[in-house]
Length: 220
Ligand SMILES: N[C@@H](CCC(=O)N[C@@H](CS)C(=O)NCC(=O)O)C(=O)O
Image (tube, rainbow, N blue to C red; front, side, top):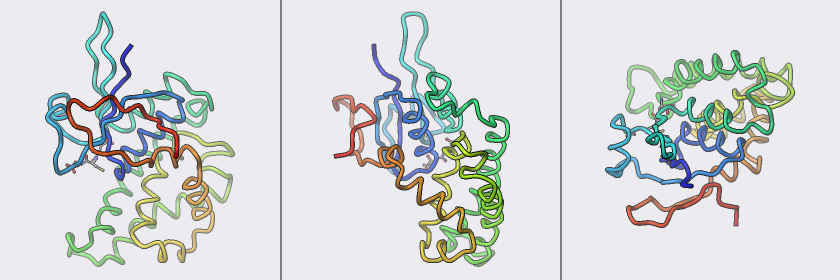
């Protein structure tokens, strides 16, 4: 039987979220790495909004492969198939609310902090400080337990970690000088996590006619 097909972009935090979901579920997909500047016609045909990640579910005899176009939904779909670590059993409502806060409140400031020259209304420092409001919330949660919502990972950790990584990578020296020691440790632990490292394996952009590339692919 054919596998679901994930259109992905290695450095996109939304796509990292989707790949983390696939890995924590223990699933396999066919991965098609894309270049944002040169999206393949096949992606545009299945998803005209043309963002990544996009998951095309395998066709069965009775149904056409449906398409999931939002990273949150791909994360939840993957864990609904298999959830060996019980991520969906922990604090689901709070986890979803925190992911929404990440996407709707933190991410816009993160983009402005990262590309401050494109948003001259405020300074990069202003944008960083606005983004830090969310980081302070995460720090206060991590003061209570090892992961964001408890002593075990939940959907929230997987859904949010790629965005904190992106914030940190704007200027690592600055990030690790900020007064968020619990968040620093949490991020470092995630960066070293074997499943996160598997999400970051590099692939060449997909081209029509390529043999299917099965994800995950073991670290070399
Ligand atoms: N709400 C979407 C957002 C996805 C998104 O914006 N992805 C970016 C890459 S990080 C993208 O594909 N942008 C389109 C482009 O740059 O052309 C999701 O959660 O999947």
